[in-house]
Length: 276
Image (cartoon, rainbow, N blue to C red; front, side, top):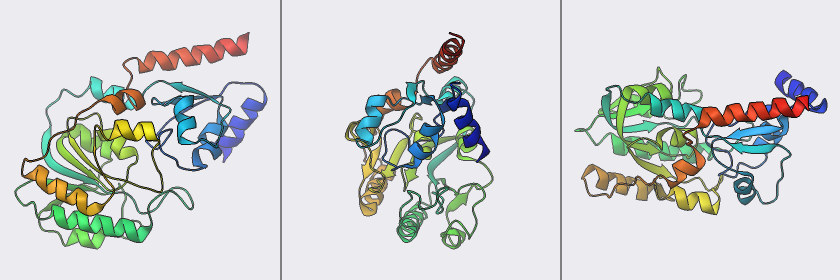
């Protein structure tokens, strides 16, 4: 589009262009060529939430990028930490549904039939927890055209649906005891800094690097099979599951205390580079 043309024009005239991470799948998960064909190729400096050139190489050993990777942390996460003191309503279990349609052609989502199967199993299990406040959060703007389980949701008896706000707004207004996720993407990054239990199903089609997965599994309950995840969720409901709150992944790949300062330093560096 026009933004790509403008970025290429600026770089061809030796003008620095700063790009930034705006989701969770960068650097730690192998999403094939998507980020190299878009974000990384359209800037000279890329502000990451935390991953470095070394991390990128570990995730993509056969790919290279010409932009400089600058770990600065997530500005959204820093803002959340600084404004998280207000009182909130309580949700026992939140299930933020993954949209069945990828924003990219031939994207990295699981196969649609597999995703539907996972979501249906999770929804039916959650509907059994009638003594808890369980909330399903479809992607804002979800419909029968892009969410294959809308009919299943309409038949549930004990589940509340919040579909009129983004996940980040839902998290601002509610204290979440546990999160269930059927696909590791941006929502996982948005909740990993919360005091909440995270039940995360893996996605073999977008594998994490070895190091990042070791750190991640210290924080989240990680599962290769849906039935194992549902079994552990049942144990959590009974109070029989040990909590996970390790911050190693969070501190390396998401949060920096001086994010704003690091961003401003990068901008200053680019300005000095151009004037010299």
